[in-house]
Length: 145
Image 1 (tube, rainbow, N blue to C red):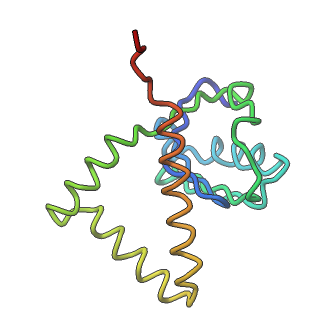
Image 2 (tube, rainbow, N blue to C red; image 1 turned 90 degrees about the horizontal axis):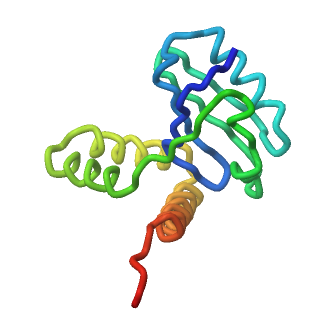
């Protein structure tokens, strides 16, 4: 069923991860099976899939670690989004008033509407810190002579 598709980690927050499998867009059977398999993982609280956008949102416990999940055994090849490219896109989006600005406005609206502004701000800061730490770990450093 799952057969060597690339699965992109769009963002990882302490309790939620968004994934994309663009090659399988609109493949309802694929996403139903992926939801079933991810839901069975220890630490996963819920999984929602949207085949039309090839999107998967996984709600999990804060101590859940993707490094323990054998996605390759499920026939998936994980790909992390490159943060410098994402930052450049965010900067361009703000300068041009593009989708990144719309996402920021939507995030603010969601935080205010839910009445959990502080929780959303803490989640945003925590995800930025985690992403920064991961970038530092993954960045290759030149050897010192």
